[in-house]
Image (cartoon, rainbow, N blue to C red; front, side):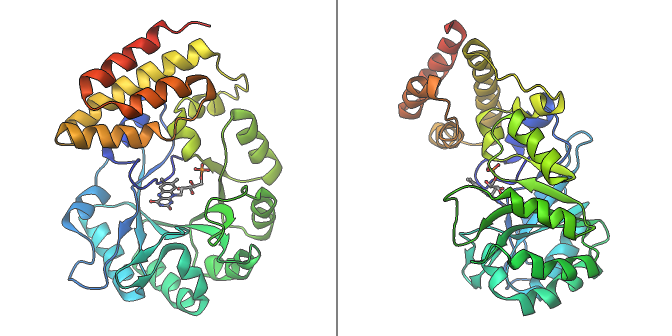
Length: 309
Ligand SMILES: Cc1cc2nc3c(=O)[nH]c(=O)nc-3n(C[C@H](O)[C@H](O)[C@H](O)COP(=O)(O)O)c2cc1C
């Protein structure tokens, strides 16, 4: 699965991944559920939740803090055409105007005990939850598993850091393994998967039903392909240069169609560039992040074709 990544996995990025490396499932960026308003989701989000691309399932991810608003939003998203709904209980920066949301909701297990069965009742398609191991206690997730099982949540995605940890340290997948053993709900492992070797080892050792790739896939979409083919050979520099040339050319073309104005297009591409962290290409990426116009960016992308080991 391609992870939901705010500011990155917009419609154009998802389409690029679908056309190139075909993840099994893709997610929208999180959609803020407002506690005010009639639909609780913006018109744009409702449209986005219902969009499809080929035959790859799209999961609409909701983040919010009012049980009632989330239930209405989920129902509205389904009415608009969404087939799969996910609840975000992981985002460490999840404050909305109306209070804590995302990972901060793990501070309120009593609220979750009401909210999750209510969501299950209203969602007729698949209902999944993406969460951290806990708010500040990595063992908290084990106390929530009976609630998820009783509510018949379809699958869980676990990023085994705590919310307060944000992105510090490493994802502790011994927790993922223990969760897999303690619940009958399919578990998708997420967090710090950067190579096919790491992903395949995690699948085998944890017994997880699948993997979700975030930053590693944004840095190198072909990670999906290597995992699918169980190819643990890391790409050479020449192969990486070709991958980056193809990726950035395609991304730029798609962003030019989706976004308006040179400034916005460049900002969006630079956001992706900031996740491309291969040491061997740091000079080229730094130069690309400094450009002020699309012509200069295109010229730098073209230079990637001539890199040889
Ligand atoms: C820039 C950025 C944006 C993110 N946006 C979301 C989001 O919208 N919804 C969500 O559930 N998680 C979000 N996450 C968390 C990722 O989906 C994922 O759980 C996390 O990055 C760990 O996986 P990774 O190590 O493969 O990146 C975001 C992470 C990053 C770095």
